[in-house]
Length: 484
Image (cartoon, rainbow, N blue to C red; front, side, top):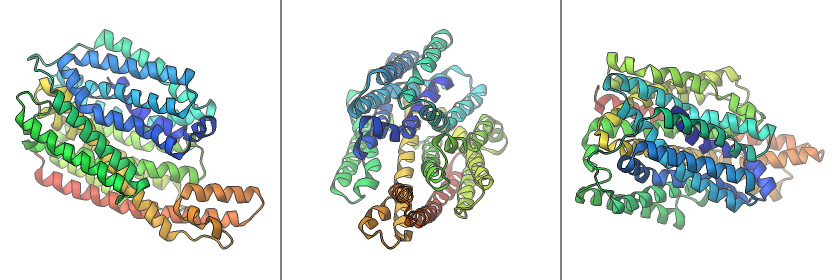
């Protein structure tokens, strides 16, 4: 299950490292590159609830194997035959469909198979693997692109997926809703629309503008469909996601804690890839290696969080974990261009420890609040909260970074014709600065230094938002989450 889980999360980020190669080889423009990233996230996030329900109804092992097969086959075909950006976008969307089958199945199988006394430990290991998926994805993607080309990012999947499928066939027992409750097609369609439109609006907000007609329309559509989904689930005889689950404080607070923790983690990782590559001038692989303290902190804290919860109570452990994350982000606000890496390593490690202490008990509480026949949907709800929280984090913190960058950026005299571009885009400023240096124009040095300073100011300034989110979340959990 852990191997299958890592594959779905790894695919979320590996392609990000290959974007420059895709741009050069396939001639993809900025919009197409954005869609190569977003197609996977939107389809994956939009279909989670439906695919979780599919696993509950027809068998979680079957859902797992079908999802793995889709991801593996599409990856191989893309690596071998893709020649246009449109084909890669379509492939990423299909891979999102497969991942939406896999991810809820992994957690629901674990919850159903392990007895109550071992479940907390098993969920902790699942959470640990979920937390290392993205850093491993950056590392593997950076290695593949640096040593081969963009196609290697897709060739990574088939052999690992083949191993996961063989092990699943041999080791994983099948489980399903023994009552055989019918599917809820209307609820499913409403959930796909609600999650899809909300994610689309969040992702497009920073580029189109939060007050643009397109983003407001997409967001409004997502909100309307969300209300319709809740109304329908309350009304129908066999709801896909019984709304009564949300009356359980453990379920609701667990989802909120997970969502806001990923708000911080995803936004932090997003800014750090730019920081290491464009400010500290590291390669993609070297940048990814510098993320390793995060999973080194996350895995042991997640795997052992069940013992801490037995002794101190789940609410206290989760609250402390969130406070550790908030403290790390406060320390991060003091970082400058010349701050030594060991300081950043400590911050990464603290965030990893905090994430492990937050995610594992919260996930256990969410899954413990629902009956086994709805384990797939419960797992999907858990996963959806993570996706929405992470998307919000990248969008909101990314917008704050850009806003501060634009205010702090000083364009050197002589670059008036390119002032708008370098003031609005940090990567563009670095690219133009390097072009000027290659032409022997020393203004390039001043441009790069000014841009790096402005970006670091934006990055550390926006970290205040993440710290505030973590501390508020910590207080909420302390006051309202059940102890067990």
